[in-house]
Image (cartoon, rainbow, N blue to C red; front, top):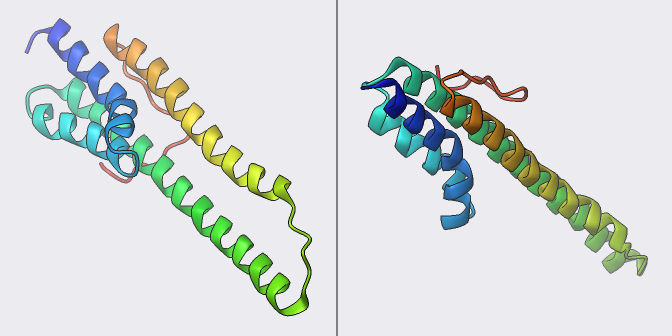
Length: 137
């Protein structure tokens, strides 16, 4: 594989998370990076490395989103229990915006870091995401 082609596939691996999210919102970010990595990992060491980086980052973001979802469910479950048994109607919409805002921050981090990684990969420079668990080695 030529250098330009390697750079293109590595770029697509990083952008696969964003594109995948637009196609399948729940798991598309992982699938986008995973599919490109699985198809091209044996053809280039650079694509293999950058595909793993992109995949690990997308898995990390998905785990963070899942954790936020669990925290949100627990928080609002306690609110429902409290209002049902103690007749407190002190619903605070600020709580809801904090949790939805957290999901928005994760989405923005995905866009920003994936684009930075894609630009670097397009130049042939490897990128290590600043916040990523290295689950796929």
